[in-house]
Length: 418
Image (cartoon, rainbow, N blue to C red; front, side, top):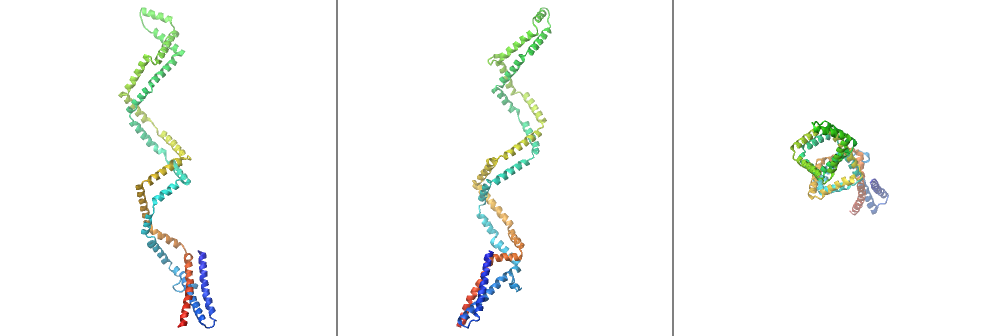
């Protein structure tokens, strides 16, 4: 731009020099028609060029530094010019109506979602989103949630009705044959206990003691003493041990009637528990007592802290964003963009708020221009104007010289004729 301005300025100066040189060269020539015509043309071109030079220069500064009235028009009228520029900008070029009309031609929602859909797939979006999620999770104070969770958990447990679960548990015991398994477990434990030598001697000793303590008269007393003399603790314990082991073996037999009767009796008792009100009352009291005395706040804090760390570790996983967050964003965007009614409402909302924002800040456009112009020194502002429009202004000087020359020729010819 500066090069174009300098070229135009040189051309204007050259045109003025040509006019002055032509006028001076015609002065010593002998009087003739051509001399009169050329001298009149060069003289008029020189006058026109000088007049236009004066006019162009007077816009920006005092010609030749002389304080001639009505010169240096731009520096003197800087404030008025800025006011006119701002007024023209606000009232003619960027009116509220024109801005609102332009806003209505845009489809903001489509461009917005297109931009979002493109940006959420960028590495920067991934890094920033994961960082924000981690920070939000880490900021959660789990200790504040613990009392509330403890209270809510106790309330839910207190409201839990045992009548709804105890029958189910009893049915599961029967269907999964836990009653038979329990019986077999007891039989196995008794079998292991009965096979021990210590058990044999203990049972024998208990039996002998019981026999000796039996009070009888006459023949019965004589018989008991005779029996006691014939058998000792070991023999008697061995007999009792064998009886117990045989009894255990018989109860292990699935088709043994005694086993079947025992299991039937157990099952009947279990069925009876379903409607045993006393049992439910006792269980409710036990439940209430356990819940009331349970201090679970610290356990809840520990659980929440561990869960918090696990979530953070999961978020730090390399594929977390692509597998969870990105599909969530894309599905949400797709759900909105495929809903015509939602898109129309969003578009209307965006345009309304953008128009409202522009309307509230419309005056700031002029203020912004004024602030930027006020920051410039007058010399700098004049230089900017000359740089941007100087080419056309210099051509005014060229045109003044050329037009003056042509008009001078015409006037000289007319002068000769008349």
